[in-house]
Length: 567
Figure 1: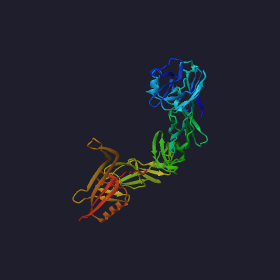
Figure 2 (figure 1 turned 60 degrees about the vertical axis):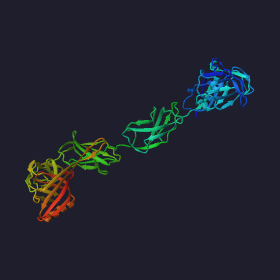
Figure 3 (figure 1 turned 90 degrees about the horizontal axis):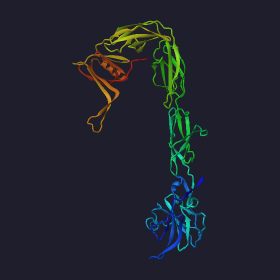
Figure 4 (figure 1 turned 60 degrees about the horizontal axis):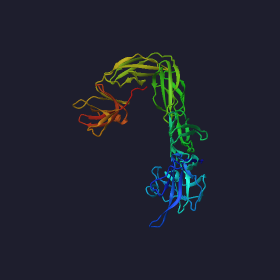
């Protein structure tokens, strides 16, 4: 590491006289050291320096967050002397000013010397020559003062230049230090995870330094192969970087960071971390749309897990498949019928990372030769309507109130009693269709009807009373209890539980067998009655009670979601 030196001129200096323990001399251009004072006591004689000098420095000039590897104090003698014993020096850990220091409080009492560290050096001094006094590194890192005193019975004195001398002769502290660049940063995020390349991705790391401080700037590099790197540099204390969307390709992304301190010293690059950049799949390509009333749409796509297809006329969406699973599906025939005209098809796909592609679009025209219109007539039956269609066609679809309820059927056994409906027939010939005129029809029956796809059972009577028909509606939700409230707060969902409990009388056991067979098939059943009830659901809880006249049957139909539309 690079080494540097800095000289710090002393900003405080005094010399002290043991004969005047409560004063100091700080107005001369020299510092007097030497001679001795003999103090006798119970434990023997003790020699004290008659004159002592103290020098202080402003440590704020030392650059922060550097490694101090050497420290020396330099003094210039004003007089030349020879010594029989070297002067002694050490440094004190305290804070002082020229106005509050005296021999008494600096050496004897309030401050007091630490036992060491001290040193002896030089047996003589020559005027005008700078003498170096090596001190501990700790001298440069705390509020220490350099102190020079006599040693033993040395009678010689020497004057050293003080802080009031000319600038080139003043005491100074030389600090030798090394640069301490930051340690490698610690990478935090993203590591070993998936990130959507279509979104902003935040990179985070931790700045590390053995001497503290804050980051000044950084270099962040990313790569797809760890050989070619893209570098992003910013001057900031922020230990994160937000990289804009659509920056990274799909695949493994390696990244690393190096940081700089306030001296523009850089760390090494961190070890590389990796995450997986995921992106939206490529836009599917619609290849063709057949010229038919129910067109077939075909497309090419990659990484498809889910697809969605729409048919639009202008800005209006006429048909929408919603989300359709299909890893290998690349074609779809429109379930509804389209009139001749101008349309556009749109397809998008979702990949394994749950990301949608852009819409692929395709404009197309339907132009067909219309067949002759069919004729529809309707006749009321015991359970609903009989449908009679005249005309030439390949297949025919029956619509009731605009909903397609059947293909090639001759009866509608699902209408509500007493409700008027609009029916029409749609005849399909080849790739075209034609609709009949609309016919109005109303069903009429005066008993209950229970049916599934294979049977219809008439339910008319009960013993000594009308048939039991109990409807229960339960709004699904959760009762939440909170402190300070006596009653719960009820949070409703969008769901409803609905059930219909029925009680009827059947005379013949053959009807019981038909009812049990219907329950065993576990199909969706339909219940209708003369009051206009109509309920699709699951049949459960069938109970048969033998009585003298026949059988009392009880069961429940639990409403289920069901659509009569076949297209």
